[in-house]
Image 1 (cartoon, rainbow, N blue to C red):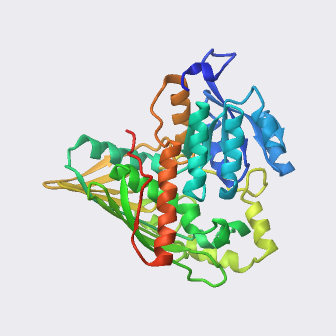
Image 2 (tube, rainbow, N blue to C red):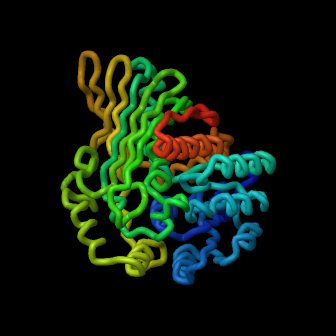
Amino acid sequence: MTGSSTLGVSAESGRAVMRVGVVGLGVAFNFVATRVSPWSHVEFTAACDLRPAALKAFRDEFGGAVYEDLDAMCASDEVDVVYVATPNKFHREQVLTAIGHGKHVIVDKPMATTVEDCQVMNDAAEAAGVVLLCGHTHSYGPAVREMRRIISSGELGRVRMINTWHYNEWMYRPRAAWELDPQGGGNLVYNQGAHQIDIVRVLGGGLVRSVRATTGVWDSARPAAGAYTAFLDFEDDTVATLVYNSYAHFDTAEFTDWRGEGPRTPDTNLKARERLSRISGASEDSAKEGWRYGSDTRPQIGEPALSNFGLTIVSCDHGDIRQSAEGLIIHGDNEIRTIPVKADLDASSGAFQNMYDVLNSGAPILRSGRWGEATVEVLQAIMTSSQERREITLGHQVAGVE
């Protein structure tokens, strides 16, 4: 179902406006609100949450209706699209509720914790004729999009190898209990892996044939996987390695983001360890609460940046493409050249612009529900491969959309 008839219309400009109802006013919505709220073609008209402070903050900032019941919000005629930004284990139920009311849906990464849940969600969306789109991954980032443009142009020949590495302090940020519960889909793989997987699937064309991986639990006080290494073999024989270490020592931002200013500095990881050492148990839950939308202590979101997710290098027949703080550097057969990249759409805003374009003008869906299903299949394969120490062959992959 596409076309501006599915959207509202601005009384001031007469332009089609996408009216969004949000379920889950957490950390992710901090970023989304900052990036998307200045747009004239998207409005946050409703929100559903169980935290009174968050609902009050939403009402004060956006003037929208607030709900504690998702069914009631989804029944509203003032909502065209529901943005699901709750903990992973709630996605299936909440997406199905929105679809049941005929709403289009943007669901935060990962789409769900199992392929089976993804299939149910996708089948329901297709039967209802609504758009189900996966959001909030760094594959929407400007540097990744420019890398894909260069690959698609053929100027460097075909892709042969992709390497992406991320080292940071994720494991030592304040975490909610479910984020460290191995039985509840809580670990680094499920919370952050979709970013890396989407990046390499976009750059490699989407069709992963098999996965071999190992995960690591290296701190007994944080009983969930906080590191992994994965080898992805694509159908066209492109290969990719994904490395993520979140145990707060080295930081790959040293290569791509540090410019002598901004929130990340060489001692960011040391500070994270020191900060967490002063809190525990209920205090950590309170600290995490302070990061969520509606809290007086939530982090301030800076100006749009390239937001490189670690460091990604793509090897083609006639050159390597790597990310830098300013954009991309191509090491070609006969020259080394720099390609500046403008910081525009990113992980937080890319899905919202794509959904608007899909509904308003029939643009292609860049990260569909089936794409999200394929990413979750890789997430599951990483965990299974590590547990069973074997290569996992995949069967739910879909090609990327330009």
